[in-house]
Length: 488
Image 1 (cartoon, rainbow, N blue to C red):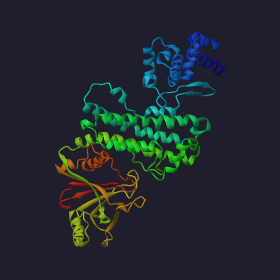
Image 2: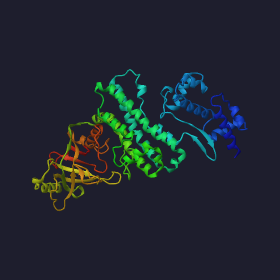
Image 3: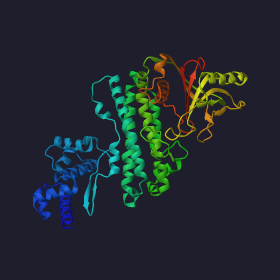
């Protein structure tokens, strides 16, 4: 394998002379080959040109130099053989995605020296690449722009929409990386700590701080949805190691106190959780810390763009009232939709419930109750049940189903469900209210949910998740109201 030895000698020469003028002829002589042949072999084996490798290494080292006290940009530019500070700044920005003046730990790329054995190692680690896959905002670049508060806020909303489309898959990739045992050998532990604690957690905190400051400046314009500040606070607490999930507190506190705890597979499993998909609705065996951070990131973005989306979604109808209800214990009594064949069967069902008037609840409308038995929508189909909410412990007629609702959770998936919910009433075009095209489910479902997301209200998905169509004028008319389970 003489070509491996030749390339290795050439790379060592490059590493020793990164602050000197390096010519291709000088490098190729260390490989004992002609300049043209060396460049061809280097490109085939390494996957880049000699010039690109030298540039990547210089810009990587330049970033580390800029982190040191009293290192001026012009001095670093000259050290790494750039003719002017301007040419260095352009090259640095293209490589790192930020100007030299903004360089700090957590937002720079480190391109490692290559070492050649049977395979090529070094360069951009896949794990480090994860940091750059997140859709980070560009608030710093916006600050010098002369635009109105409304225009600035609109741009932040645009960032949030794009981040919501990109970040979920990156969080899932982060979960996969944490669960990959080959990535957590002792030799990688220090580097992995920098990637996770500085490259991801600290960088999200920095972004949140910039976002909070920027939005605070825009508050007097009344364009800002105040719920975003609550979402940012919750996100920051999680990023600081103060987990709100009792199941995760022990593992999270361990890695913030001593990152070497990540050597333990059981700790990494609690940190990683399972992949929840681009919409966060996949069923998972373990809900981990990264899943929680994924939801926190989503909450910030939802608070920014959901209010505008809700307005746009009300096409031909509108929300006439919206409130949250925290009801006492109730029992829903009814029959499966598939067993109710036509309007006559529904009439008979509700006639039976009419005869139980003395045990009706304080929310006694005709209801089509929809749920998944506390499981994810990807594994359990939706079950529809026609019926009414009755008082707790109401006797159940023969042939009927019942589902209990309680003010507090028992901690288990499925019934009893929570008697906490959002209640939206709609007016306008009935067909538009039930339109499905362009919606995840239908218009009433989407808008009720999106109002909640925009207000930062937690939806107990999947363990206690349920929804319901409400027939304010009786089951033989159209539904014009919607219930959506909540954690209030």
